[in-house]
Image (cartoon, rainbow, N blue to C red; front, side, top):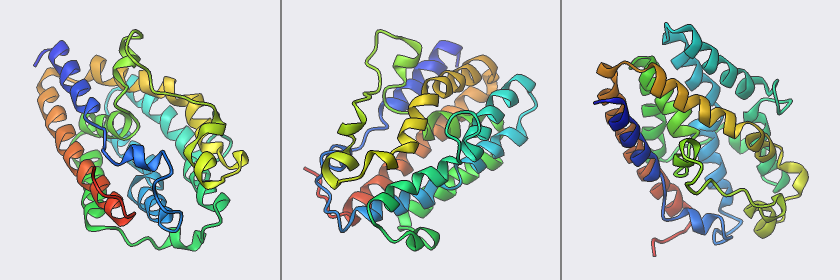
Length: 240
């Protein structure tokens, strides 16, 4: 698999990171009494431990320039020291706090079976399959979106960034803008993190490792889609 084939295979996987229920979540179709289920699963599956996932890739990597890219991402996620001022997992909890949810629930989340399988795969792929797979899964798949092609080609549609007043939690559930610190932080670092992820993968993954990276990314996508199906069902949504 040459570099261009590797690039296209990864982009096609990212473009499939698109779930039927997301437009329902972002248009207020989830009853507020069930919204906590979505936030709890997200927090337990990857938000709380996302710095750990990056760290697992970091400690396996022998390439100094890649480690530098990863540790900068890790430092921001774990501490907020470059942009946000607080760890990103802490900022995520401002969403349920602002919505009046019981934050104790987030310390003892009962994962849906599909959520646990997805979480286990994230930790396995980031921690036990080599740095290239770990970096791809954490910095590309978990952090990335279906709009990642625009990172490499500015003529492609970029990820929408509507005014904060249009954020679904504000518009449909009454969240005060002061609780959107994580959204603001993500907008501050997203471009840099997306560019770094692609620099790492396209510039430093050996040719022999490209196919295993693509294969694992495809497996992660499959588990992500099943996880999102389960969350949608728990929130009372039905596929159109």
